[in-house]
Image (spheres, helix red, strand yellow):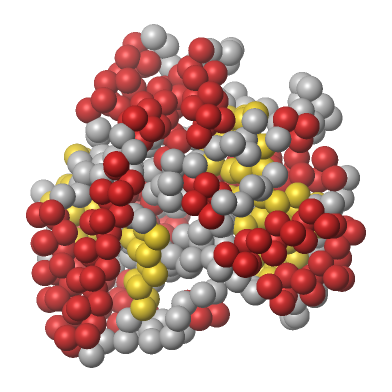
Length: 428
Ligand SMILES: *Cc1c(COP(=O)(O)O)cnc(C)c1O
């Protein structure tokens, strides 16, 4: 099914690029296949080097909310390139993107641009530590916050033990200040604060978890984080790298009505170019150099090409608020197609959905945290994935990734995808 050209390129790539890829999940290891090499994409479609066309539900893992190669975004990128791609000096475009972000997300009074989500999270944590003069951070199992050392931590032997490295090459000392608790567990949260409250600089959370499949927060869980952080003088960091400008124009915080101290962005705000950003209250952001003692810098930070793509993408989202409703509706239709096929063929299935994000799990128990997500039938996912690809549907090659709907997906796409789901489920 994977074309000869992809096979050939992959064979060469694995010789000189680790795993043949520049980010691990792309290697298709968990589905035991060779990944198609992508040649181009337009709207909701992605085309591989063998000429196969797929309906794309990966959307480059989140950024492509308007679909691929949106003409207005492409035009802005071209114009920016012609004017010079980087100056390492302040530009009006940086100001403009900052104004759009601060205008959309009230908790963000000031914002600093960086070049990836990983970099933004890493900087936000440093900032929280600098501001509170404390070292410990609390994160939740199954939330991904990029690959910086301190966040590649998994839970120790109990909720109150500090983290252990989740990657080779991370010194135990680098994660000894990282505490890990279960997502959506108010009990564990309270226990951690009871024990470490005075030492916690920040709690970082994906307010809508998109990196263990899609897992929705219980509102009281987010509220409880807010309450406990305030009580104990810790900061609340929302990692909205996926949810920002996706769940709503004001992100998950706007949707749930919860105000964090620091917010991290990425993906959509770069319109398909490499970008990350972190922002928050002025008194906190003023700690960053050159205003304050927390150092952070970047050669290509705020470069005009990325800013141009981000500005146009956010302007389109801002000026066409019906986009969110539209993609939500289409995602809902797809959700129904999944449920219908599951019922028809007696497949144990749970679908979590929020707006244009879907999490499709092969399990019959509710998926509310990592523990329940990993109960999914991975062998079944593997087969499902293969049948979907065979029918021209490109989804993430892992049970633990979300389905991303874009504004470019139309009724015909949903129809074709629903038929593919029926076909795939009939074979499971
Ligand atoms: C993708 C992601 C990151 C990391 O962003 P990169 O640009 O890949 O470094 C961080 N947090 C969340 C929630 C993400 O989904």
